Length: 389
Image (cartoon, rainbow, N blue to C red; front, side, top):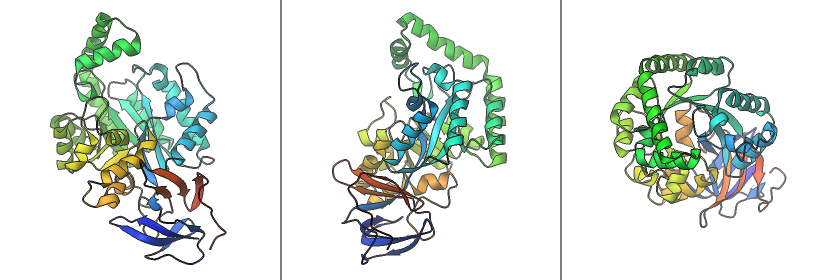
């Protein structure tokens, strides 16, 4: 099947008005000119590799769109699948948290998170996107090691990240901002919020020895089974050094430029949110993804909580990237593929899986169609696919 007359985004450049042939779900041929009688004429639209999202926080809100309003798990997962494919994501890592003390309460309890993972694993064959699991563990979660070992042993988890939401560091360096947020989210008085924040700080101090042992054991388990390990919200070179010593290869959402530079110096790939890059700032007042990109400190774009931001973020960053649109596209395709060991996808090249996105770049951009393994899994109806040619 030929797709012709597209601006094809290759790993290093954009091929103007080229054509691509798909055979048995893979890219079999690429030419620098249009071909006759293609299955699809792109009329100058973009043809990009399918987006690989290593961190998507949407699954919890799809199965429970409002607090205590629980939808059938099958419905929530189909909605997640639809949300990803219409935004060009062909491989998505559902970021499932194990942190029952978070503001999201039972949504991140062991029981609820395990239920979501079991359902996702059961439904993978009927969903259109390649769904994988990113298990996020709060470092002082008492059962973290046992849960990690269980998930890895039954083949459920594909990526593990270690999070620390203790006040006074990481994402919550600003105690006053966190206190105000606690008042709003938990309905507390200011005095109650202050006491709650202090208790969380004290709890981490009391469990420091147990946390260190747990981190070392999780690191060893991931290394033994070839599971990628990521840190989260690194704010200092010291924290980056610790996570690097544990075997982390990805620094997710570094909150300071200093931490991002430290991660880069130690060979960790930095991942930041597409919404941050699109808006030009972090909603929590941390490092701007655009600034990180301009300074050569951004490697991976993740959906974070809003997959529709991926394409617009790529288009914006492409204006400043040294390699233009090709360089910016790698942030959501080739780079996460490399970080996650997905050697069969992530770029438009001979032999790679035909995971593809057709999009226009007018305004904020628009995904017209998505292909996974050469099969169309989404179309907005604007393109007519003819019989295979």
